Amino acid sequence: MEKTFAIIKPDAFAAGNAGKILQRIYSEGFKVIGLKKLFLSKVEAEGFYYVHKDRPFFDELTDFMSSGPCIVMVLEAENGIKKWRDLMGATNPAEAAEGTLRKEFGSSVGENATHGSDAQETAAFEVSYFFSGLELL
Image (cartoon, rainbow, N blue to C red):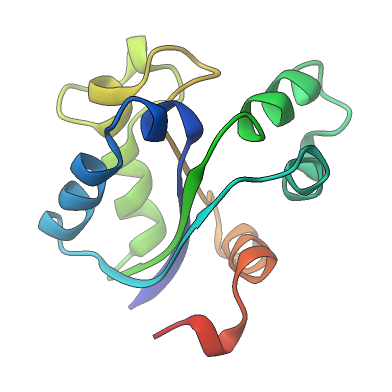
């Protein structure tokens, strides 16, 4: 079993799609071992996305991620990172495959409903940014 980190982003939360996304997560066989509803501050969003700090989209991304509530999660499944990324779909919802979360719930590259770790090292950082070991059940 492999752990990965996931976010239901503010756009999906505001649109009332968090429950639908959670239902898909469970129906696809993921175990949710950590879950929190948060309203990130700009500083917290900047800390989380620090790897992108020199990218032109950094301010827009961190403004968006601090614009409303989101749900952060730790998911577990066999090949969990790949499985979650496959379920999310391409970053750009217009290019995402039918049946993926971003195709169904995303509206743009910037507001694409979900986030997921892209590697084990990234997942380790992202999980520890939001959860202590005692919070993972």
